[in-house]
Length: 234
Image (cartoon, rainbow, N blue to C red; front, side):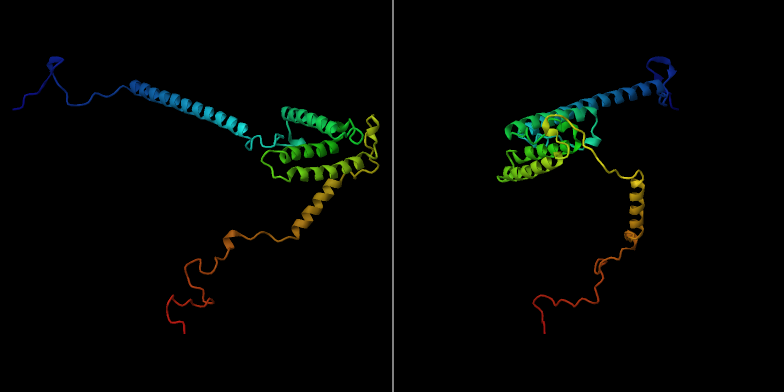
């Protein structure tokens, strides 16, 4: 006969061999504690990565890497610039135009109201961006010369553009356009584009692509056999 074991905490009560069920609240608290610890570790990791990123960015800037190679704005598409970006580009361009006009004595050929003529703004922004690249320390030896050649052609375009307005006299004059496109020109252009597309073939369907000969491992029957190396080639 087997004598049941007694519970040490209560000598008069037999010890149970079944495990006491855990409290769901305790399990939830443990899970929350684990998640909190994981989030804290993730936060520290992200902070460390952010710090490394800022350090690397400063190193690249100090070394003259892609982030600051030209010193020019990364985007000169005026129609896509938001307000603060456009403000920064304007300041950059105005400073450069002030410098270039003084260095090359452009006051007689570049009107002071250039900033009120979008065509001149685009011309000067392109020149400024190219100048920063051409005179970068890592540019090729003939890059400044090529920029000067482009600059000479641009000066001719600027003079030709300003000829109808004569803003160089010191007073701004709006450029007068005698002819205007009809209001529906855009719809007509889209109709032309649609008609052109109908006459063009559709791109091939990738599912209909024929595998190249030999791609499936089968021999090409039209290809002559290559004799083995060192064999009888008669």
